[in-house]
Length: 435
Ligand code: ARG
Image (cartoon, rainbow, N blue to C red; front, top):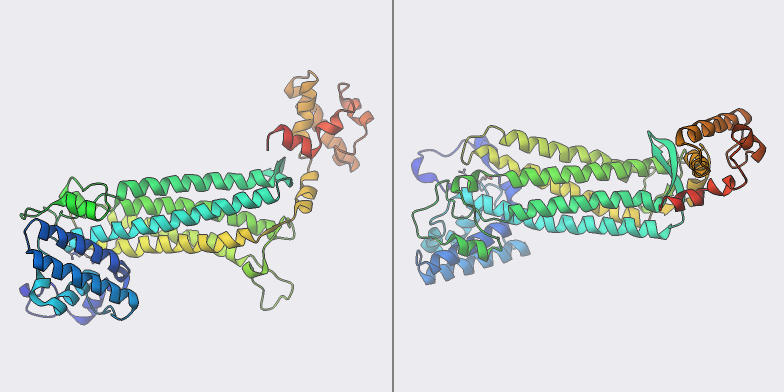
């Protein structure tokens, strides 16, 4: 039975009914839907719009329904049109006509807008906690290998020596910005649309401030049309999660490279790696690859949301029912990626000897050699050129800047003395840069 049955002379075509139904997706908001209804009924009773006894009967029964769904003793009907319908009908089945008074001065349009905000508020909290855990895991990993020196790259070519710790610290900075973006969107989202009705508010003397406060909102929406038509918070959060996933994909890409025999800078724990069905020697960083791949899902969710919202006339349109699949998937994906990454990073072993070996090749200290000449009074461009000649000499004769005899240094520039060997030590290079 539909909430809107009165106007119609036929049931909806069965396949169309499935097409129209959103219960498979929105049932996960049952607790938020009930909390919103309890606040609404409490307000209706406080304002004398329903009687005090009806208010108590409704809120008591709603609390029972919520507890039973949570305990698994009340099954959500998969054939209901949506979670709002299921709960209202269950309520009415239990307390009769009183239950029918709950929807006074309310529409599913403001109801669903409240539910999503309440639900996403919790999702934000859970996601923020996971991002913080990842930041802690990266910080701890950097601290555990505080002396490890590795090549820093530009163009994936060895550029200048850095510490492993400094490399990881770049990721914690990205993640801190992600925290800020999510918190910012969360603050803007925390405004109650309840009382917007279908689009034009209501004629009942409702108290929007009261329901907003009961539900922990910071205020209520100024425009009732915008209250039901706004899904900016879904867009903002999907965008923030997309950027987060960009960061996770970059971190995972590096871990994948670092796990290769070409690098071997890290080794993942067996519990976070997988093997091959045919190649017995293989240990694959599948988890990192999956996180990298799943970033695409979240970008897709954002594009889907943007496209669904684009050009919609005011106020509510059923297109907006598509919002939940997309934003729920974006949160589910980001959370499962973070949940898996945290212990993967925590158990990841770094191999500082290999990092150092890579940092010792490729003339990564050439800039420091040039800087040394600058300290001897040479203009940087001349110092750069002299060092370039030294690098070419090393390549021709199969040497490194560390092993090149002082006489060869001096043949290129007479400002060199034995102090150059200390100046180009990897430890000196990273220390002098405050890495
Ligand atoms: N299932 C709907 C949604 O998610 C609830 C709102 C329905 N409102 C309506 N007028 N049909 O958007």
